[in-house]
Image (cartoon, rainbow, N blue to C red; front, side, top):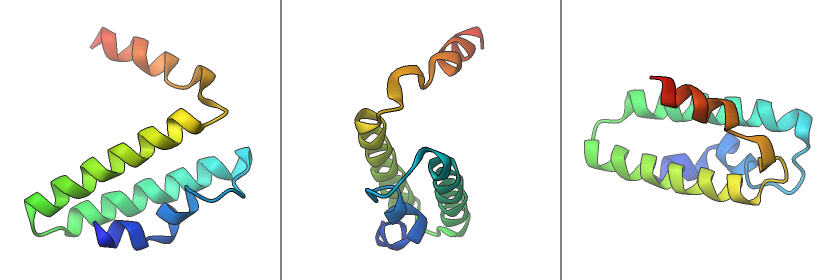
Length: 82
């Protein structure tokens, strides 16, 4: 989990300087870093904790986001189809 917290892209998610245009790039970079971290993980329990922490933090960001109003509407309907 410490490796995740130290990632520059993960820290950028909590920056107050985020603007809408850069948010997508920051999220893309963070997801790429998380995927890379998952591929290199050797301990399943550490990986599980890291992913749970990531999920918790991303939920916090989503709840605080001013752009949340329409987030996930399409995804929710698509998920029900499958």
